[in-house]
Image 1: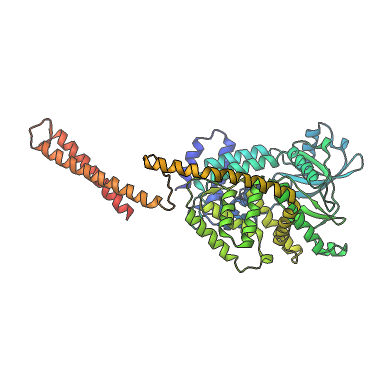
Image 2: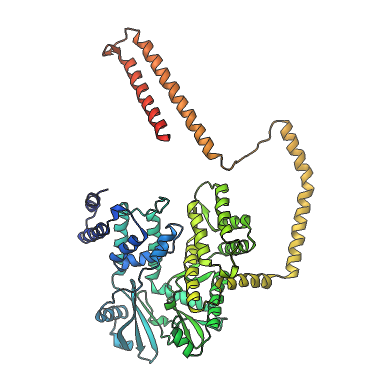
Length: 537
């Protein structure tokens, strides 16, 4: 594939000069990274970094999709830097005044020129309101929506230039990945949605006295500006400061694990990017920051996750297979034998492993890789869950290695069972199930009698799906097709030869025209048959 030729073809379909220049820049980056010689995880990360903050953000979202990208690509993309070059302070003031339609000093008495954090979509400054409240102001980069949307359109048009291959040579559906990334990015670019996320998170954790999140100033929050209280705390990975403040690492790690498990199992609404910079400690309480990217799990997903953990603890391959199937949506026919074997191989890896040393994030990525191999689509919430668990486990291993996240997870499942167990409810359930079983048992003789009658009269039909029979049937179908082609060739040759014994006109090279057509058709079919046989070999 020639990059210059493909670029010329795509440029012909672009009227905007700016889009054409941006496309040329993208192609130059691909050429500089020698994409024609194949793609590697490191090369993909470098390409996204070279293309700028927009693509860095896209790469971060891509790292959450191990069902699309092989695991080695996801792990490499998680290394993408979150920091971006900050905008000039004057531009930040212009955005604030444009949003509020008044001078910035009518709202704030002070805004720090130094940037607290600068990312691909927004940057954060410390400030103080005219009322005296200390706050932080999150300001969106001007024009980022248009820039990002244009980049994605161009990337879709140039998708033929980038074929990300895994070692198994599976081609990534890049268009589907881009669609999902754009959906997530649009949510992050609307700060009103992030404000709603914060309020929902606060409501769900209102009874947890050791967890909090920043207060939002809704009257000053717009789609492009988010104003929150300033958190004067300590990042969870600043160990010396935490020890100097007299905080117990084990206690903090235990509370962090318990709260994150609560977010997953009880709430089904969890922080999807729990890296150390988003987890601070203030007065002994865990403060969750940057709630722009939140994940959701349905009751069905949470039930399947529970089943998977319990099946792993009991080394039950059959239950694990049922949990894996419940987590995804098959895109086609499933080879259940191969799926069972892959899950059994996965279970064998953990057969002799101490449960306390199990890494939940790695296990989740392995399960999602099985889903990808067997063409089973998984919901977006599950991919965010995989990224979140992997990240929070890494934080806990770094900050409090004595605390096991998976033990907290298993303990939570056990507590959940005891809390939801009521003898009266279980007894009522047993009565209902016993009554239904009795009714069905009474109908059994009648059903058997009907089956016998239908069999005697030749009306019985059996629907049989033999697992693993698809390949033999396909080969048999191909063999029958070849036999049919061979018979047609023979018939055409015989018929054309018979026509040649007559004086039928018109003629071509002393051969009747109709016979000549028959010979040509037989020749074409014969060549097709020979090529097909050689290709199959």
